[in-house]
Structure formats: structure tokens, C-alpha cells
Image (cartoon, rainbow, N blue to C red):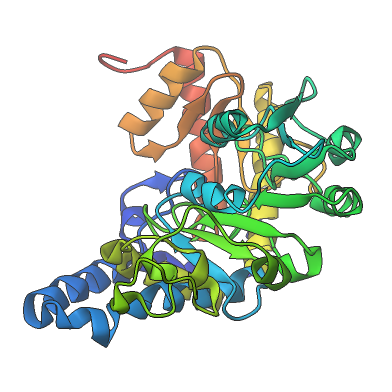
Length: 391
């Protein structure tokens, strides 16, 4: 059964697909062919224009990327800033907050990515308290659990839109509604949602939205982003700041307080220009394909994966509600870590996570034939215990 839209023509844009069954886009999206040309352009620009490249394009390149991302996540113009990674982006958002009086609690979940939880725990040094909402046995965190943890002491709610282990989609709307009623801000981590499920940050009314181009947006590392809702930016300033945020950075005035009037006001130091060049082609492709089409293809492929999981008699924590499952199906089999290594050695690219098993993450450029081939090889290795040499 083919995906609901004809997306095969895009496969030629991703070189790795010619030799590999690549189903790990939840960790690193396949590199677009044009990314190599874009990086070559960066190198040529540096080689021939030198420092002049800053004024000719580089200085505003973060804004150029931000504009492309805004179109994908439903953000208004000038509301997205670029950062090295999602932890840094969240740190910028959190640096807008100061604990005051009884309003000093940060609410997060036990299924948030560990890097983020480390950051939240570090806020205790500033006087914040932290409440970590536990998960259910299936590693999901229903929105009502988070809602119940919010009260008048809550200063911020930090949650993952899609949980990285189980690919469970947390409904952010009731969380945002309750948080705002309590006078708290919401930082929504969309690293596992942007590019694989439709996101409209304006419709959600979320205060901050963080994500990155590394995974479903096929942009490589070093390209995280932060959406700041315009009303929030108008009333808050980050403590984690730098010269890129200033209206007149080349005045080199240490007393300068006037910041830019766009999303780059939330940025800090000198940006990673090569990473931006790498991200441009993937963002263009995702925009052309459209996240609605990507979501439809993804649901068809994850649905088939779950059907095969049942046929093979394996266990999966993936939600059977297609409205609650994003782009990944985790498959738990005996010796899952060894099976994952064996698959990778044979060019069936996956990853393994403790507690859930092997994560299979088809993107719009994958095919139903690859779904069948992946599960067939996984089943063969599990059945024969043929893990290969040294695995």
C-alpha cells in the first residue's frame, strides 16, 4: 500500500537513500544533495570575500533561516531566533524569568529529553523549585497530568510536544490554557514535532517554542531555533544575551540597551554560519513538500510498522491512536541493542533507546517497500540471532 501522496521524486535529493534503508530521521535527518553545494558556497564565499561576507550576507543569515522556519511552524515574521542547540535555546527562554515570591516552580515531565531536564534542575541555583510530572507505564504523559501539576506557584511549564522515547504527542492546548490562567509561561519543545506533524505556534498561543533542523527538517547540527511570541518579547528580556541582539552592535558600546526589533533580539554571540548554510536546502524541501503531506505519509508508514509489529509478535510502546503518535515506532525485541547494531552494520539505519528498544522513524522520503524490508531484516536477525561479527 503506497503512501497517500506521491513523494518518490524527492528520494533522488538524498544521496544516502541509494545505498541505505534510512529510518533514523528522529535523530538525524538525511542530508539533502544540495547541502553539499550550499556548504561549498560558504567555503567559496569565505575564501573569496573574507570578512566582507559578514556585511554582504552572513550577518543577517540567522534572520533568513528564521523566516523559513516561521513558515513551517506558523510563526509571525521576525519571531524566530537561531541558536547552537535546543538546550541553549531553552536557556535563553528561561533567562527571561526570575523567581519571585511564591511563584517559583518550573513544571516539566519525566519523559523530557535529559539535556533539558539537566537545565531545569540547574535553575534551582537561582531559587526555582522543580516539579517533574511522572509518566504512565507506557511512557506517555497525558496532558491532564501536566495540567494537574500547575497551580498559582507555577512560573513556567516546560514540556515536550512529542516525547523522544515513545513518540507520544502531548496535547499542548490544555496545558497552555491552564498555565496562562495561573500566570505562567509555557516553553514547548518541538524538536520531535517540527517537520513531521503540523505545528502552528500562533494558533496554540504558546509563549516559547524551541526546535531544531537536525532531525525532521533535514538541516544538520548547529541549527536550533527559538520562537518567542511577540507579546512575550515585548515585555521580557533574556539575561543570556550578547552583541548580536543589539540594535547597533558595531558601536561596541558596553552600555547599549537597545535591542533589535525582530527575533534576533533573542540571540547572543557570533553565530555558526556554516551550520546555517547546511540547513537552507532541507528547509526549502520541507516547505515545498508541505508538513501536511509529510504527516499523511508518516501516518501510513507508522501504521504499517505497527501492523507488522503485531504480526511478528513484538512489543511497542507506540500509541495505537494515530492522533497521538508522531513519526517513530519503537520496537522492543530480545537483545534489542545488539539487533540495532546488526541492522546498522547491514545498512538498515536505526537507533536503540533503553526502555523502548529499536526506534524506526520513516520520513517522507522512505517507501512502503523499505518498511517491509526493515521489518523483515529485523525479524530475521531476531529469529536467527545472527548479530554478525563483534556485535
